[in-house]
Length: 220
Image 1: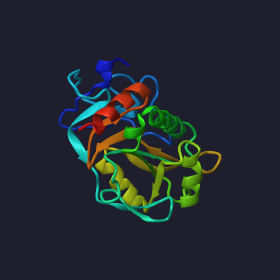
Image 2 (image 1 turned 180 degrees about the vertical axis):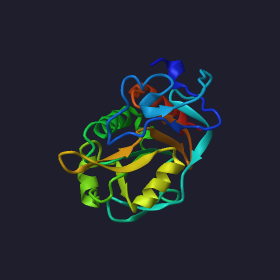
Image 3 (image 1 turned 90 degrees about the vertical axis):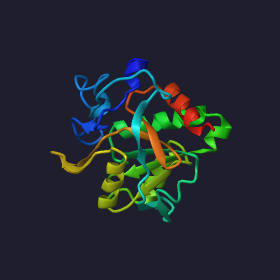
Image 4 (image 1 turned 135 degrees about the vertical axis):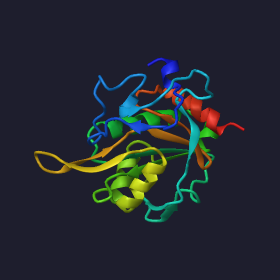
């Protein structure tokens, strides 16, 4: 994907979900590309941006919703995001492919940040499967990627509301033929500066570009 393709300027409707994802399986190759990365359709392209990810002309606002952190304590998305930069990703621990890939990339991003910027940056993983993802399960899972990543869970209506405020579609459970279920959700990472998110990163955004954007978010 070209740099111009990643610098996406949204039209009147910022993100239109073209293909709600089943589980963590990404969109097909035919669906991906400059106009439809990671299963979302975006109108208008611009190379005039401060960010290498997808810049939102109308930044998302952090929703004032209280979830539960993986230490069992309440976590308010506005009051408890004290770091200057917050990265938010929705997924679940039984996700077969896409969630581990995104979290691995975020772990790589985190390690490549200068120490001073890393100290200003918080990564939140909001489970879309609170029935299976207990506090202990979240903590164990995230520790495989980076112990500083914070897992959040709550009621499914609260999680869906939080996702909607950040442009994340959550479609709920999809039963599998062999038993069990996947959870449908879109897979972008949302980048907040304070309580406003001016940028998102879709699947396939290079680690170096996310690092560059975090440096921009953490700047004066």
